Picture 1: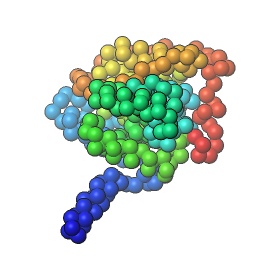
Picture 2 (picture 1 turned 90 degrees about the horizontal axis):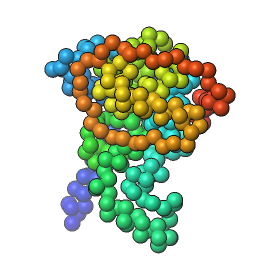
Picture 3 (picture 1 turned 60 degrees about the vertical axis):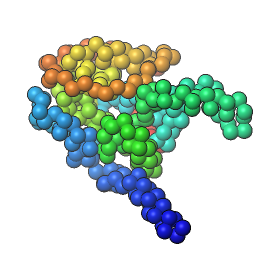
Length: 292
């Protein structure tokens, strides 16, 4: 019996070690940019036998060197409760599960019955659950993990997201995410993508151009501002409508990206029209301290 408990403890210890073992630790990114992420490395290996650009375009910049529209577009398009959650968005998870009540309490029998119903159908809704990832979870995946759909990998992603939230401010998490997101073949981050697609610095992007970059996610290889832009323009339009105050829902999606041939020359996107006062996002972008 002692041997059984000893090996059980060792096994549990190894599982916990695997869950928290990431290098460098999240606190490193308070003051450093990644030289290469796990996703960059994985993509480089997968493109080895394809006719893709071999030069990696990646130039991290601070959030103050980005257009004020970029953080706003990212939160609208990818995680509209980013400033409220601690790494996982439980409201989005419940919605993806098909839970239909407005709140949940273990003391409420109706809540428990609805949760049991949702759990009974969870496997059939697994694609919607994958689409409920927060910006912090996506950053955890990009920095340390892979696009694998293995459920154990998703558990590690959740643990790593919590660690990132504990170590970094929201402002820093958003800056890291916008700098390591894949936005085209060997294009990493908004600065490289901005110069490639629009021939301008990320600081000079219009609202429309910012929404176009975010609209490329999460399929930047199969639809971006320079290649098959139809799907990108659809998401761009939804993001812009939300920026203008329309109460619309941007669908959450999760799909394996298709590796396509290199993109055609960039397709220009029209200049931004002057934004009305109601579209200002200064209060979201430039608040001092760790609240953002």
